[in-house]
Image (tube, rainbow, N blue to C red; front, side, top):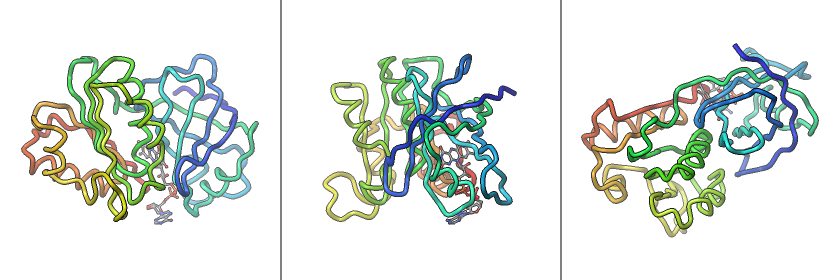
Length: 234
Ligand SMILES: Cc1cc2nc3c(=O)[nH]c(=O)nc-3n(C[C@H](O)[C@H](O)[C@H](O)COP(=O)(O)OP(=O)(O)OC[C@H]3O[C@@H](n4cnc5c(N)ncnc54)[C@H](O)[C@@H]3O)c2cc1C
């Protein structure tokens, strides 16, 4: 297993209670869009039963200069320490891991369905997909716009790309002008007319992934067209 020291360059609040951390890319570190790493704190001032590390998806795209992860800052020892890290801090990175990655065939239409912090590997894959002119639909659910990490940035990135449709969906914001409420079969059919042909990527908190899997079954999507990644721990 590959192990690297990585140095924090800066952090950025990317949504309410949500922090992105940027690291210099170590020599020789290669990864595919959508993969994750294990990020481990070195000699943290506090720890807990889960230990000093967590699995986090790389939200950065392989073509970007820096590595980036993003997380909801909850009240656990790991997150408390992570939230207070200063630029220059060195962490241990193990990986990359995982096969929640884009298919080799760039002509297959893709539908990403995610919510909340599940956007991290999707940001990476969407940026990669843009460079390959893939046909992509992203249904991105959040309670409110201020909870939606990377939304503005992704909306700007897809502008002018006619093969990409980004649909932000808010579940708890009456004033939202776009799609509201939970993602259901009717919403899916509005944006994905031939629901059975694309390859679907579902990821995020386990409850969201299972709800979306049921929704796709109801829509008649064959199970072998669905790829999933659950963020155990949420
Ligand atoms: C493949 C993969 C990719 C992942 N990618 C990401 C990612 O990109 N970003 C990301 O943030 N996470 C990601 N995760 C999840 C991540 O590994 C952690 O599990 C998650 O961030 C929770 O860490 P924690 O320190 O907040 O809680 P932990 O200490 O890990 O939580 C332990 C348990 O306590 C519960 N718990 C802790 N705090 C709370 C709370 N405030 N409210 C309710 N329950 C609580 C949790 O439900 C969990 O059962 C990924 C996981 C996997 C498996």
